Image (cartoon, rainbow, N blue to C red; front, side):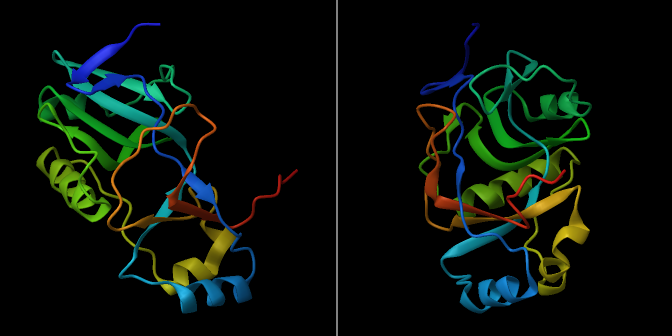
Length: 193
């Protein structure tokens, strides 16, 4: 498999940081309990996009897109060329939904790793980068009403992801690993027929 060097210490494809799975938010009572116990000083909360996990890097004037399994993403990404405007040495982590890449994290900027930066700093950086190339940021913290609507938010949104504000970005050793610094809470984990 072809490997692409993004910057010192980062080669694509890699196994991205993945959240552990927490308790579902499938009932109003579970949502109320979740909101009552949520510590916004400790956690950042994002809506969880129901897409394909992907990483996008710009190297030598080209975009490369990987999947979460340590391989190359094979489907078309309609807005990939927009990220060329960032320049070389960038790597963003996010989701592809309906063929559009929506980044939520920055792994490398201008040839420098960002993995040691805390989550809240990487989020600010990602928002700034997206604004500079006129791409949308879709991961604002959800409202209580949005959370209480639960499955009404499907198929686009399948729950929330909590990220420890001060954690760095940890690349994993395989596609089954997860981190306790990130936690996903879905509306429902059961397979719906």
